Amino acid sequence: MIVKKISIVVSVFFSMSIFAQDVAKTDVEIKPIVKISYLDSVKNSFKKDEMATRVDSLWMNELVSLDIYDDLTKDIQTINTDVTVDEELPTELLKQRLKAMNGKSPFNIEYNQGLENIIKSFLKNRKKSFSRLMALSEYYFPIFEDAFARQNVPLEIKYLAVVESALNPKAVSKMGATGIWQFMYGTGKQYALKIDSYIDERSDPLKATAAASEYMTKMYNIFGDWELVLASYNSGPGNVTKAIRRSGGKTSYWDIRNHLPKETQGYVPAFLATMYLFEYHKEHGINPQRAVVKNFETDTVQIKNQMSFKQIADLLDMPQSQIQLLNPSYKLNVVPFYQGEPHYLRLPKDKIATFVSNEDKIYDYVAYQSQNKTLPAQLALKVAPKAHARPERTIDTDLKWYKVRKGDNLGTIAAKYNVNIIDLKKWNNLKTNSVALGRSLKIKSDIDAVVKNPKEIKATLAIEKKSEEAIAAVDDKDKNNTHSQEYVVAAGDNLGSIAKKFGTTIADLKELNSLTSNNIGLGKTLVVAKAVPEIIEESAVTTAIASSSSIDSFRKKATSAKDLAEDYYVKKGDSLYSISKKYPGVTISDIKKWNNIKDGEIKPGMKLKING
Image (tube, rainbow, N blue to C red):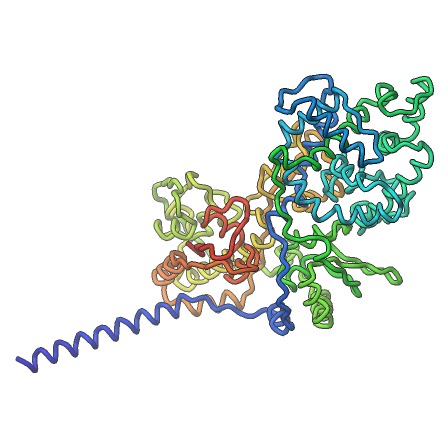
């Protein structure tokens, strides 16, 4: 009896060990083999510098967003100063505050009903916008104040940049005025701002502010009144001179205001209203959003060779949008190199430290990429050798439809009906592996399906797997580029509103449509998302074939790998971009979708689902 019990125990242990080995083998088999790229090997050799200055992704979006600019511009152009606005602000209290502002400012700030109406309108409709603008001002105002102090220009002029561009260096008006100070092309050239195919210094906060300061000084020498200087900045000195003549020689802005262009009539009151809201924001419950980085937390380095923002972003592990923010004067997302002309790159100080410590390796990598440029995907598809076609025969069966449910993907649907992903995409005219929730998919089962031998099926599965990885890589590069989609510009549209509508960026829209400015015509058809095909290497396919033992086992492993979920706890300094880089094939949009993140904001200690 004892011997029998012992034999049972031994057999149980033996069975468990065999089962554990099988599980271990399965775990080993489903883990993807990640090859280290040349880029990764270069970055692995970098000297690390752990300075903790980061630009928050949410604030990044604020700096490149045009929605505040559009709203404020529309307000200034359409606001009616004669219409009383119902907002809680006693007139006597406002008069006291304006008098206090006038006492410490070179501007002639006097109470009038029109100014009160604009202030109340901003308080009623633009509180949230001003909260965001105050965060941006922490970065830009020190630049303005430094330039104005050198030219003895009143520091209050800094508020004019809010009215002009909503502190957006990429703002472009309908007339073509560009940058934070909205210089026209001719005026920019007049004040020695460089404008060429690569660079537009009207978008450079430092150089454009210096030019604006010089302009203000010249206009003050002519008019001797800062309100008239502001009016001339908006409509030109000629219109101000005409208004002075038409008013009978009066030289106060408020006396000649009705003789100025309509937009200029609301321009100076909008400036004074902006100054008031910045001065008394606490009293009105406007809480400024916090700027994560300030101008003094950045630094510049002179570039010794032409390099793209993408190369810099890849090498320094930072989003391209951050580089665009800090270097808005480079139009093509490329830092050029002209012989004899210095060009500078502005980065957070921790990234500057990494760049300077590894300059030789960085330039070597840029040179390597220049020597090993690959053909564009579309061209490569045309010149790639075509596979020999094999005879095919078709089998007719019934047509089926499947409605996409939550958690579905093309891989699981194809496995359920025992069809190939490539056929599934062909039947439903799908360009990518993304599929919308609730969409009905056509399942032909065996209709038009190629009858192949096992080796051919394995090869197809390997190609499907490589296609998924290639598309994931493209998604990582062009975040919202999941569907080829077009949009016809309607009345009231601009690039900012269209980008917001389709969850993309203005820079991506301009690149997809080869736009050189933010101006778009009514009725123009824009590509808002574009799928990019990738070339699949024969050696990669061969490797995938060798690793697959059978169709069923391959599908089961692929499905189980997809179903595996992993939790990631956010550390200090993490961003969605840096986290996505830790998981091959995972994109920022994937992480957002899995964790229901809408604005991209993450905090240390937060738990994220990966591949869930």
